[in-house]
Image 1: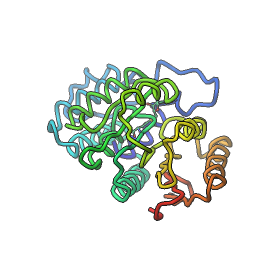
Image 2: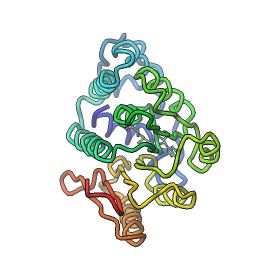
Image 3: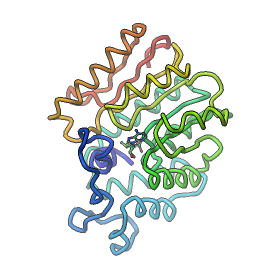
Length: 271
Ligand SMILES: C[S@@+](CC[C@H](N)C(=O)[O-])C[C@H]1O[C@@H](n2cnc3c(N)ncnc32)[C@H](O)[C@@H]1O
């Protein structure tokens, strides 16, 4: 998904971004005919179903099995249509920053927290080196199931594993399986900004973060983040923590003075 999808996620994943205590609305899972654009190559009637199912249906019917680029293209196309191309600049910025960081780091082990339907799992997975592993953690079982299928369809099942649950829940099992050898080369935090710091600290406690681990954060999806007092507070607290921990260098990818994506590391050339 391109930024349309990106801004879309702001609307699609309110539980990830909503203030504490905000109710998770089942309505977010339903596609309203009123808000719907014409989806590509699909019968409009099919779109009165869960939108993520529609996304999977579109991916399977319009992309080439085993070709990650065509899977990403299908997802971009779906969200572009759904959101009428809104937010493309922000999405492109994030996608390029993510690709650049992963290409430069070339991690043997990486983790993503917040898989949604698997777009960034495919995006990162296609760049993982031979023998490299990406663990993608998603708290919503249905999204995790869809992401698993999307990753498999993209031909990346040997490189990407989707785990259902939170980091805290799933890390013991991940470690037991021995999927991560040594420390993580890259971590993408793309779930709930209030969880970025506690989850990073869990990884630190488990000795999975090294001086040359690249920490990637998405700051652009917080609903109403432009007006939220909480989003900049959480971001600043997170950045201060990285700095205090050992003088981390952070590259900010910004659009109109707003942080969209940050790439931080303590001991790795600035990306
Ligand atoms: C912004 S979306 C992720 C987008 C995805 N990385 C992509 O670009 O395709 C955030 C996702 O994080 C999930 N999430 C929220 N809190 C979480 C948590 N504590 N642990 C794991 N996943 C979580 C939500 O269910 C949602 O699917």
